[in-house]
Amino acid sequence: MPILKEGELDFISTSAEQTQRLGARLGALLQPGDVVCLSGEMGAGKTAFAAGVGQGWGAQSPLASPTYTIVHEHHRDADSQRLAHLDCYRLDSAADIDSIGFDDLLESGAALLIEWPEKIEAALPPERLWIRLRTVSDVHRSVHFTPIGARYVQLIAQYRQAVTGA
Image 1 (spheres, rainbow, N blue to C red):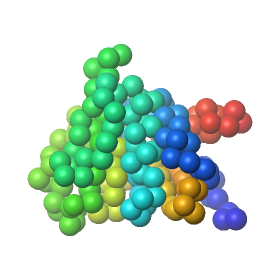
Image 2: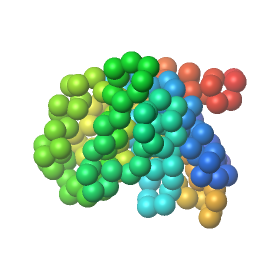
Image 3: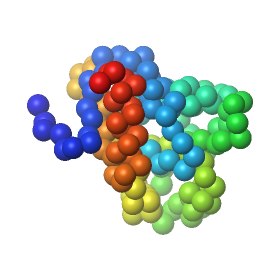
């Protein structure tokens, strides 16, 4: 079992539905301007987790992987907030993000959910929540949360409370 650094959190999900529920708990806690990075190999559960984030956040339409369009913007009925879901798989480097208006997204105040963030890591803000999903078996996934910055340490503390009650 890995030793976690202070503030980190680790779960083992036993199904796609559980991975989605973990995402929903996080989505309910997101604030404008939050940056959440979902890292992991193909099939690790990034899109299931992202779908849960959208559900918990209150998106009007379900989140699906924006692989070909790269960015999907979501809205919710409760207020005028936005959630931008990015899939950077098709990008070759951080230099490619100019074509999708990444700086504008960062400045817009929308919460950002980024799949394949390692492709644009050099352009990411210094503070963010990094979530690494890893395939453990056909049905089991490891979901590891690494908060970078005070806002995200606080977010993970709230998330831990929401998920575990502790």
